[in-house]
Length: 585
Image (cartoon, rainbow, N blue to C red):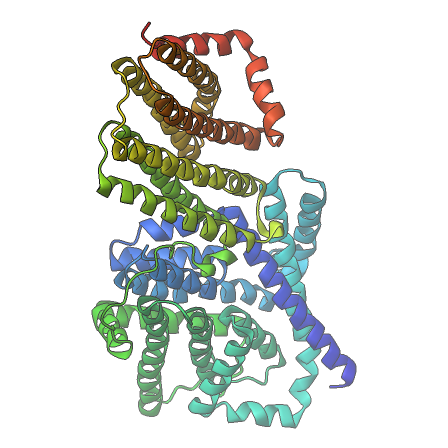
């Protein structure tokens, strides 16, 4: 094997890994975060968890990605450790699908059907279709399908290139002698574990082994321990991912390691005992790609079947290894786990959930501040301040998290959701600020024993109801991305602006008649100004959803467009809200 063959092999390996990564990314994007949400919700029983883990891994073609995601779920409190164990076991089964796909490269035969089944026959067609879809399609999903097809074709081409490059090694005695070393089970397991730990993909390392099997120099006695070791090596990704996570997340990663180590020990004990007693005649035979896929599947399925009834013991073992510490608390924003960043669709979905919680906190803060105007309570006032601090923290955490996502990895639909979140979290943060301002006005009224006239109280109560109404609309619009409600906000915002003017005019008239004081006028002006600003932020949220949906971004201009698109309908809604929130004469 000369230098050029080595370079060809390295190039083939690079193409193989790149193709696998491209295909996996395409599958992940095409799923749009749905698979992750399924994992999150449907893991009530151990058998269901195993099936889900296997299914999701078979689709996204990466047990490491599934396991890392599960570590993130456990870290964020979405999933219990007991639920995670079944998914981890299932992921090991799901990853065997890749080895079966790669085994297609070993199909031999001269018949038309067999030749068509060979990847070298259909991969060029898939590559052509994939490239056409990537270059000429405008739909994001079709581009993702194109990436899957092109990635698969590149993967198979890399596999074929590797196989051809290593073929001359069959005649190299040194190569054969090195492989003979791996017939020693311990050496074979270490070699498989090391290779997989380096490239962090058991699917890829099994693929490399399948490519090397084309030399005919790898026997069953060498292949079996290497395959066992590959399953242990894949645990490195989850272990690295759990670094810095909470204790339960670290337990999830250690369960993955224990499962594969215990499974390997049991499999070795049974397999090599049976070999010693019966004497397997195939041990010195050469393996092919299909044989490797069979061994890979038998090990993972049998290990799962044997250990599934003992999930509680695995959980207990994890707790014994990583013990609880008194006083340990869960992170408030654990839902924004950096492990989810590798799955942008799900990461954005998590951000939306956290931002929805933020909107609820801002709403609660403002409703409490309004209640303080009629009946001041020091505990409620402190709660408003606490909620405002919490909303500030939410804005910082969400904004920082979203900035870590690469635009290249985000679909158009998820990009719109991302823009909606980034635009709206600032408005919710400002609403909580105005809640504190209203609370301070209420505190001033209470401290100075100021009293609004009976009419002023009724007017302020009506005004407050209008504000709460528009706030509920804004929160509902954001949380559910509900366009009909978004179109209701702007007419109410205009009515609220008119209410502010009317309240000021009425107060000035009462001052002229000596029924109200200038000091109360200052307080009322502060309140109405904050109310107006809150209504403006609600308007921003409604318009932002309309903009994001229609992919246009010019808020002030768009507010005018909302009014002008159907002026008759807009005026009709304004009249409705004017009547609903009419001030007493």
